[in-house]
Image 1 (spheres, rainbow, N blue to C red):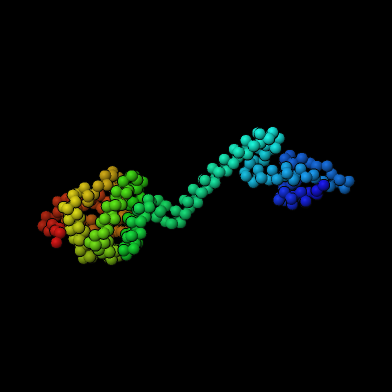
Image 2 (cartoon, helix red, strand yellow):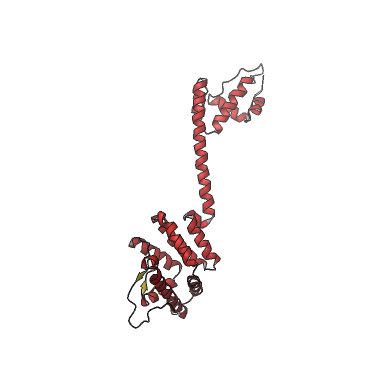
Length: 266
């Protein structure tokens, strides 16, 4: 015969837990010895281990009480159902872990891998982090709006980043971030960008320059995100419009300002 302490030790629980299971009617009260102490048989160890295992699996104690009273077949079926639930919970927790890992990795929380790769490439080229942030903020709603087109757009972006002139544009913009609107660097930047866009449109067609095909409200949202993060971009767009192009997220060819020299591919 076992004391309550020995029973608890063999079953891997506390004496307090044994008393709690007695109070809940899960573990029958045993006979007591002449001194009034509980004395348990070996079968109580098995019953207590069952109770502990089910309780640790998250089975409510009321349900544990029911399971302990059913036949072997019904008990086995119930255990199989509990096992299925636990496997589902494990899969869900694994998904939570993946989301947390993505959260820790920053950009990859809300962006497809190819966009994250593109942003990392901008960083590797030495582009200012504020510009990378503006690019990222723009890609978040764009990727959510048209996820199927992201691979196509990213292929185009990778191709464009192979052009040293576009890389030079990003680096020049990086240097101009903290300059005033009347800084001549912005004018120089507008000239460079207008030449680059015009050459690309003439060689590949205007659809290649801009084929995002997104609604105007989303375009405005993405433009605001860019202007808030990179304030000189707003002035740059004003200068660009004088040179025959307008828009930040969505580029459109317009008539250049009278008297302004049209951009050439020189």
